[in-house]
Length: 77
Image (tube, rainbow, N blue to C red):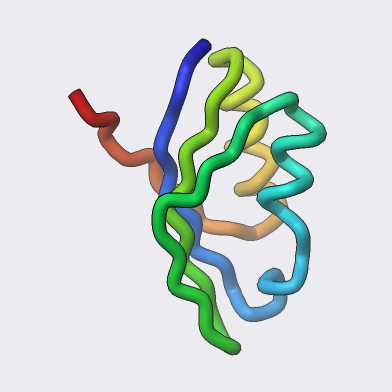
């Protein structure tokens, strides 16, 4: 199993979309939210994605395709 930590920046129009739930379901990934800062006009979520490497990469591409900015963060030790 692989794991990547990502920082998701949501625009206002996507805040009510179940993107984290959907990526977990569609790509068989486990999601773990580490930090979230969500307001009415924007959202920023630090998230771990765990699963097969290819599924993680496809899930990240899918999230980006929805209009969310994604930054892959360095993994810890």
